[in-house]
Length: 243
Picture 1: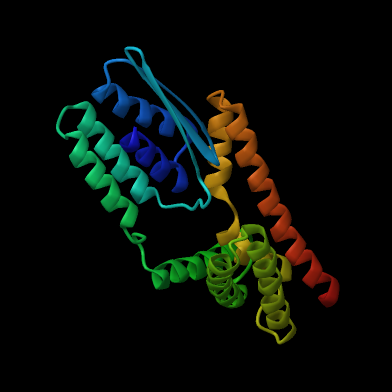
Picture 2 (picture 1 turned 30 degrees about the vertical axis):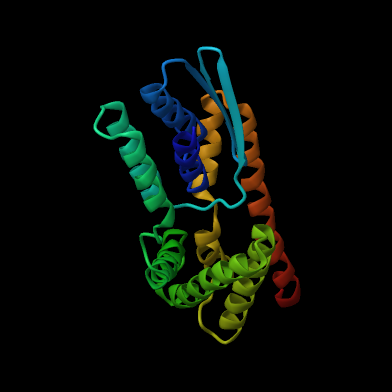
């Protein structure tokens, strides 16, 4: 049971879809169990029941922090396949899962910040801006990404971090355009906030709804909607002062 729950926890907390988490947990359980196994997964918790002969065990774990680290999802999937093929014992699987739990993010902070900055500048071009507009977008997108990560680590409240970050991005872009660095304010703002847009969250929400996981799909959709509202609120407030 501990191996199944740890695998499910790692996948759900790092961006795995609901159906994939349930399928992985059941595959692992059925590899080591002669009885029946059933699971129920939501974005914030996992229920698992194992039944063997006359004995039944049920356990629930809470998922407090969620982020996106698809490398860990891939590693857990690989362990699940090895277990199903009989290439790994339960003790080896638990040890490997504990190692994955302790892994640092695949990409360092400086590289993710650089990617956020460059992508912000390129999004401006894609939305119809010119090269002159890309410079403030690169600055605002990179600084905004760092501020979001720091605020999220300190406050532990994602929506607060998103509102403040959106406000500061709007402030940087507005001041830049007032100083002559860029002309298309709307396109620069849209490009700069793109690293904050919850693309994986929206994709998983639609995937869960299509798979019939209505509770998980609606919960992820509501989370994505709140993120969009937080970003919009932060930008709207700063535009009131600079219109």
